[in-house]
Length: 420
Image 1 (tube, rainbow, N blue to C red):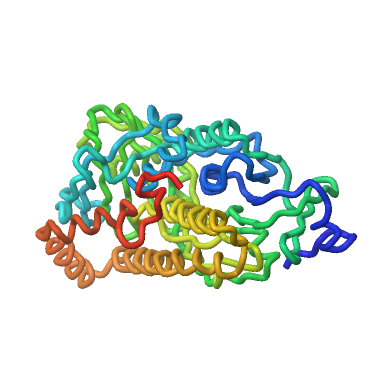
Image 2 (cartoon, rainbow, N blue to C red; image 1 turned 90 degrees about the horizontal axis):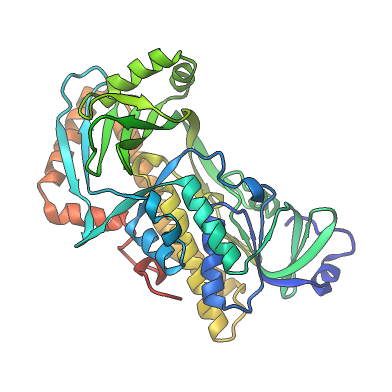
């Protein structure tokens, strides 16, 4: 555990003010959890969220995310979707190809219709900055105590956790939640280790404008270096997620604009007419990480603090939002029957609920990346046969769509669109 400030843990726990839940990290998962707990625990619950970059959250995030149907239902139930709906684009269909960069033709091996229910898209593309702003506005309206400070140390004691933050300030809380990202300081302070590895790949992300309408179609082209995905945004725009070996990604970003454009067009093609880069391309290293435990003493890990997976299936943020829905539900259920909602048995229920699903998705995305990101003609033939077979089995495709939408297995209430 992180060390408490001088004066001893019991002194911190007996000090005022105290909170019910303290969340560290004001990203998409942290703000969503604050809203979910406000709904579940009620208006009198004291929920504090810490983030030293509170005033600039999401301001420079040019990425976009695919929000699965279940996650969208949760955001609607939390009152946050209305603030981002105008910036969202439903994915109406999706195609998957398998080819080489210089191939003239890219045969389509797999197609998906975009609905999980009539009139409900299986996912919406949303700019991260717009979603961040909508969640922040909803959190302020809900009376969440937002503090622009970092938690420097913590220690669990009888009945609570003592925190020190800012300029020597202290606070006690019943439950501490780490939503502070893949390099979580709280996870490290708690002594929870990670199983992790890198892929030697980076994802280049940016937005493009194009001549013809995309009609809500997402495309994922599996190329030897990694997937190249074009994901529809409102208007004649797409978000591009372009995976390359890290050295090649760095080389591409260093190219003059005209040369980068040529490389883009070679992969993007001309199906949508001319294409123009309209945001600054940025590269993010890709890797896998899984915390050995999602919980500690009065501590829960959520989102990237607990797990990091390859973006090949676009499920990273959605996995974090499923964590949010599950943790909020187990905490709410315990509180309503008068139990200590940070007790080991309650947090263990959260871990059981989320760990298998997360591990299964991590293994699946890791396997897909290894299967597709190579130059083997034998593996290419095998995977293309497999894609073709799946494309001919509509019931199996429907199961894949519902699973990607977060609507299979034990689905938390919020992901079903129900209030806590």
